[in-house]
Image 1 (cartoon, one colour):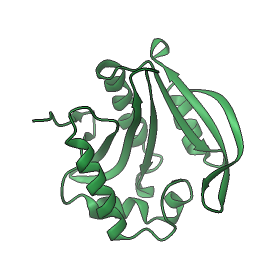
Image 2 (tube, helix red, strand yellow):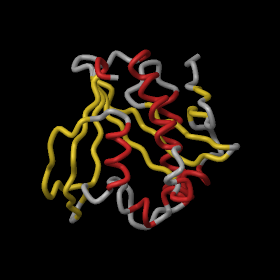
Image 3 (cartoon, one colour):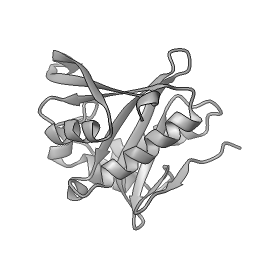
Image 4 (cartoon, helix red, strand yellow):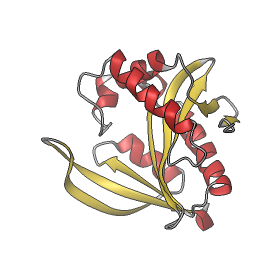
Length: 180
């Protein structure tokens, strides 16, 4: 049996996803303001897309050696955000951080709280020393969040192809274990 991921922070529960979370995933990703900065999603995100995403999350959770941790950020029983520690590479000792939160909960410190807990856990429990994150240069709130958490900007990529026909300027940020 694979041990489920579960952390309680001051206001939030950060946990593995479970059946029934697809409606909350849909509510987060259907928002145009969220869609603008989620690189992999379709423009018209549907409940069927959320169900497919949830299926992927649940399959990953069953692996003995996970490549990704798709984490639900829950407030008062509702999933308000998604934090992903992905592409875990024990050889290079790094992983990638992705996150998105329902716009109703922006600016309230929930993302900072959840991601801080996920970082603390990853540096303790995963064979990594470095976490990388990428943000669209227009997403100033995300940039500020990463800087607040101690990430350092390493470089920018102009007009990075994100998906067919879509390009954006992005910034790459890095957080190393010895600096946390």
